[in-house]
Length: 106
Image (cartoon, rainbow, N blue to C red; front, side):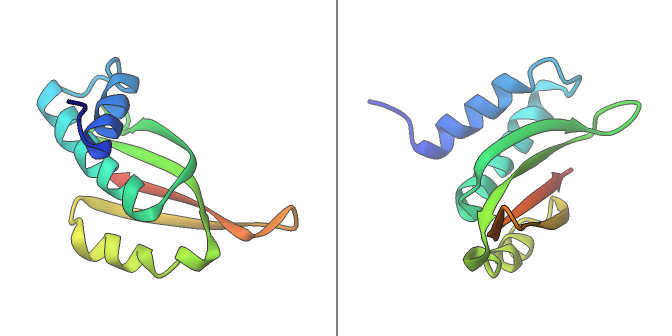
């Protein structure tokens, strides 16, 4: 029996960040939260990366969402206290109805 989509995303994120310098427990916890955020926001073209200098203490996830999903960001911030910041940038002329969103999870 295959795992849930959340487990698949979480495992993929943890795999991408396995050399990030985060300890395994923190990486698992942050990857689970990032998977929830990824699913809730419906991120497309997403990337994940370690956050923190000189020692990583979190992860970032960046992707695109449709402008119609902007209200979902409030729910994500309300439901996930480990999401420390959300940056929203309108892509503009090439895609006026698409926003580039970056979440910091610590």
